[in-house]
Length: 612
Image 1 (cartoon, rainbow, N blue to C red):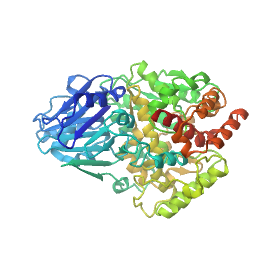
Image 2: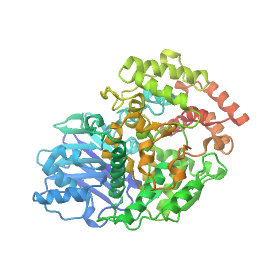
Image 3: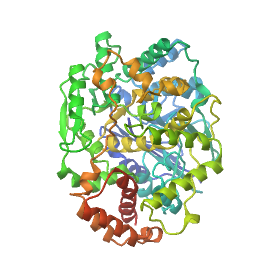
Image 4: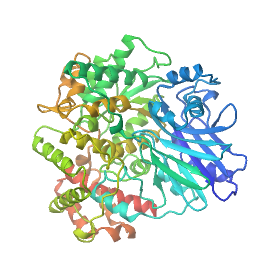
């Protein structure tokens, strides 16, 4: 896990060391354990790397890494969890290794299988490989976009890096605001990350499951992974389905315990994180495998005393089951303003809330020298957790809308228009212009995938949430917030085998009789606390935003709205926004819905003030 960067000049002029050093330094927080820079012979290409040492933390894992024959060079961010199995396979074909790192396994895999290696990898990655013989550059991103890869292409150069802000501040490209993206964010904050566009007009996102070649100055991008093309056969008997889920999930956790440094978990007390830590404990009892970290009993719990989203009792119960002594981090009203600007800066985009809780808990891991965390991300979007007590009607309505609009651009636009009308009716729409000026929906990865005709409404909705909208945004947030402190986050529920298997299951295996994640709950029977396994309470891992905006954030919010930011004023009716926010502050009527709709305006204004 690291920060990566690269510059390739297209007119043959040399890349200056100061240019690649500056770009690499802008992602230094992602890799605090070392820096590496490599130039090709012509010096028109440079790779930069900041290292977070997890596998083979000694000199053997240094990057950029050159193959033994000197032909291929790699710079890479991520982990290939099945690298030991791939290494044995490659050694049987004659490969010789000089290190114990997964990076060298990728180089050997490239030499043997070229692009075909991607389908063999179980992991998360953003990588670039340069062929010194053909002078071709290959870049690729993992199946579901867990690790980021941003780039900018001009007539003079290709520049890439792990974060948008690194490119924007590198001085290597001109930067301007993409107004269409900014306006779209204010209507749908989950409708951007799955696209190729970003807030910076010149910066593009290599989408999840995509790869690209730079050959003779031409950029070629293609999609190498579609989940729907890899759905496995499902056992007919329910007991066999449950057993298969259990086997895959347990192996997914075991693979992600491979580490040469201590590992831990962020434990919220909900089903997902509790299932992870209890399965980690079960794996130790069953017998640890090669390269598994024996220093894994580190559970970090963010608690919110007096807030509506505090789950400390459940976290304590899960930790006790796993025989782990948790480390608690209390987050209270005073933390609303703690490192606020830095947190917004590190998140590197616009979201529906202030992600202080995640930023603070990952900082706590760093303070305890635990640099790897196995977390429960992806389970909600995979198995339908966005169903809460009292919301069964709304849940079914959203599923029906998703099924109706899944194969029609016109239907999607109509649904988007209806949603915008609802936002307007509730007084949460502040963009200038009428309904004709509603920003168009952006093309998102997975939007055009042809889904099985027998899929139900829930499966169709989850497929889009997982690949196109909600999950890509959450993955971006947790990548930036964890890597701000040099913490690697691993996600067992996003093992590609578990994803394809679960996607292939019918709706009833995910939501039935008032429960979501049905298959996972069945699979975890007798393997975790029963009260958590069958609990229906769903609490997101969020800062207590209503309480904060009704209190300590009120003055900050008012001050922000008083700032003059021309780019924001051109898009937003600030007078109406001030009146609405002023009423919410005065009456202390902030709730989760108003936060989710209005905070993106505040976040965007803060961002544009810094952008300018």
